[in-house]
Length: 261
Image 1 (cartoon, rainbow, N blue to C red):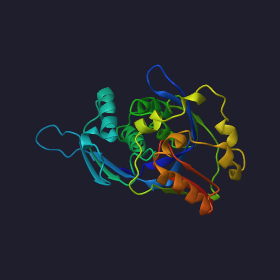
Image 2: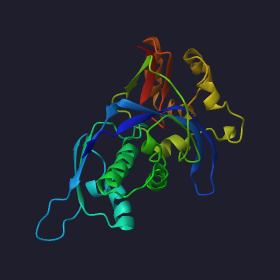
Image 3: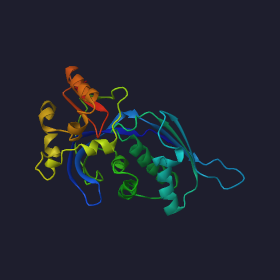
Image 4: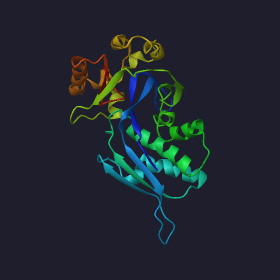
């Protein structure tokens, strides 16, 4: 079985407060982007003399983790521990840049859960899968249904939204050599805005897209741009090219622009 886990972008991202568990509460709109995808294949494990063990092979972009630490393997382990599913061979061709705010690893994990649910007829609903996906990572639950959604909590509380961007194209770029860790992005966040009233992102996206520039903001830009001017410059370059709206996605370093087709 082969699927193509896609990336996401954030339309606005508000960091609204810090939680007792050390995480931060967020408000954001997740939007799937299917033009940029990984390639994920899962097959029954090759049989040998002994009971087969799960195996993962990675290709494409070189990841900074061992195959056994990949979220796809963690997704298999989660379902194996609960349902005793048999071993599988997982082949991941990595195309979505990691550490860019595009959610590629989260997408791979969620697609793995969906594929294993189908392969082994586990009968899990989307709600069931979302609860399990949230245990793997904050963004993972979004990719189960993979539809535009308003997200709160740590990004795991999802409400579907209607958003039609068929008349537009989305361009995603990353400045060469730029990487922003989540820890770095949070370290510089403006905590004076915690608890302050913020525009409702669900209302903002109903406005004409030409107005989004003044309505929809990513709070991480204020902490990331001073330390990474190339990312800020790319956002402005998107506008010079004619983008109707441009923003950094997630905690960076990717920037997207929305253009008329």
